[in-house]
Length: 467
Image 1 (cartoon, rainbow, N blue to C red):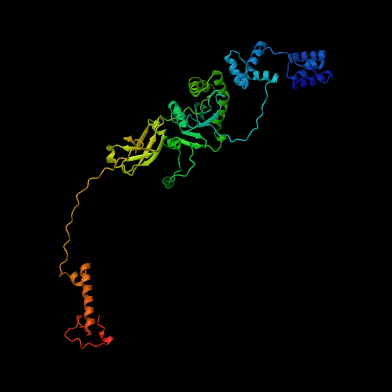
Image 2 (cartoon, rainbow, N blue to C red; image 1 turned 30 degrees about the vertical axis):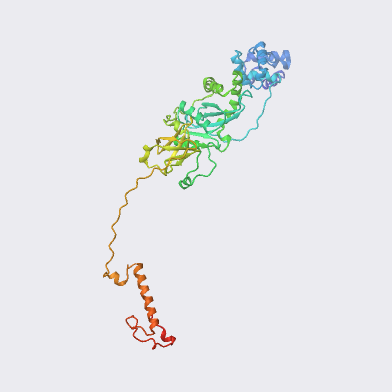
């Protein structure tokens, strides 16, 4: 018996004991007097069983036909639907013109013992409010999974989800690389415009692990990856999540796609990347967004216009220094700059070597494209162009001072030859004094050599001359 029926049993027992009248009983049961008389009559005829609802245990008048139930369960038992949940299976049955609610399908499976209830352990999470506008923040992630269930090569699905509206854009690639991130972002930008920010994980595609260059350290800038550099040039904020749960919207979307998209491609017989991307663009994404996308809190779309140089920004750029022979070396190749840029004086200046996604090379200096030609591998470097030699200007020799100049009298500026002569004469004077044995005159000149050699003494002290 239900709680309502048990309460009526207590009231009818009071009426039977004449503790209550039917008028009082009708007020307690919240029914009219005539209905209370019917309930009292059933209780008198059938006892406690007369208070139980008469439809209990009988099939519902709105139940599905047994043939529909049998057919739906037979389809559900097929191997291709073995891992389908009740909600997804109900959608597949609707395509077969079998309208069954997912809860009804779940009860049928529970009755046959083919469905088990999985209870997941709940973890505490900090709730974050959605962005108010479409394009304010777009979450980007790569989902690695066996998307073709062994029928084709393993690949990665690059997924982009708008935080405000759940708008989905996705594309298959062989690997999660910078090129894959560029391509999926271009698909979003061509369709909606430039978003205000991107919410990504801390993969090496988006975060640089190494130390920055000396110039970056002096400027106080953190090192950037090629994707980070492109987002800075486009004016798109790059937000790095500290955990997968932080960007839970795109992570949950990956789980939904790994469940639903895999089975849709199985039913469609898709086994390759090209056919899978074509299936996404032409059928799946449109239907998915129509059903699961929601309206943003604000009707304002904050996407910006597509820039003209989008293809040039989504590329790989390296800075190189122009050599003295007007060549630039990068990745094992050498490029000769054209002579028409001679007025720019590019020698020993830094130019940007840009590699586009289609393989083309561009050399850029201060936003201007340079003309160049690639030098063949193994060829000799072109010789340096000789500069025209200017005629040497002969300066007239400065006249030497005259002998009567005051500098001459003081011995200033006479040169090495003059002083060598002075030293030679000094040595000659010393030899003369030593030979004569007489003191020198006050004038500094040696004494006369008129004395005979016999008058010279042999005293050593007298033989010393005055120097």
